[in-house]
Length: 277
Image 1: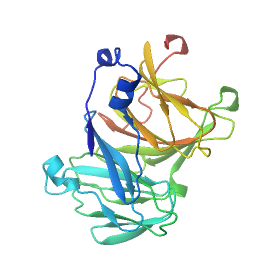
Image 2: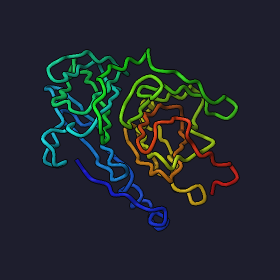
Image 3: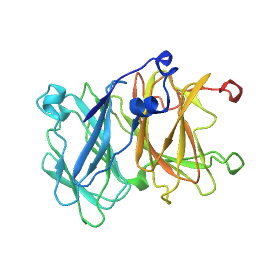
């Protein structure tokens, strides 16, 4: 697990491209038979990839977090964007199909990830946030996620937001998580842009379809924006003061995760197009 620190808007005013990438980008998420995680000081979120191929994998961060076991004081969500797999939660195994997910509550001692087929391994994108109360574990089946069509073809932002962990359907301490899919011929996400000063967010860009596809992710304050060019299966941290939107060279998908002061999905501060610089 690597650590990324929190920064003020004034800090990043002076960052060049390499500094922006070093401080906000997680360049590698999935590595065969390995767990790659980033700990960001922005609301103390932990995010990254678990990629079991030939053997099961379990996240163990007791010493790093100063606790007896990883989820002693945390909750966790994940979405699988690889092949079929399983998760065993304190001895109880569940099948995880592609695009299925899970919410796992505080106090869970063992979470073991596995793949069904080594030639098509599961790719578990995991997000963990601090918690204060135990809520029930819940399997999050893709077909049951709240589907919210957004945007239109004219503005090249026609997409479907699949809300997996959402306060309207389940209780968590603070974690929210979902999966957004842009339709063919569309390239913009979350535009017009917004901020939500009460929550930070991470984006994992995925499922590009072509190796040479790229997404330019925009962040920073509305009056002083920055950008980071993203490859498939890379993630970026958006502080609470930052806009978060992007445009791709073709359609794509991304997994978003939020935590902070509230769980009101629509609590957003819209940014007028004329205010972006």
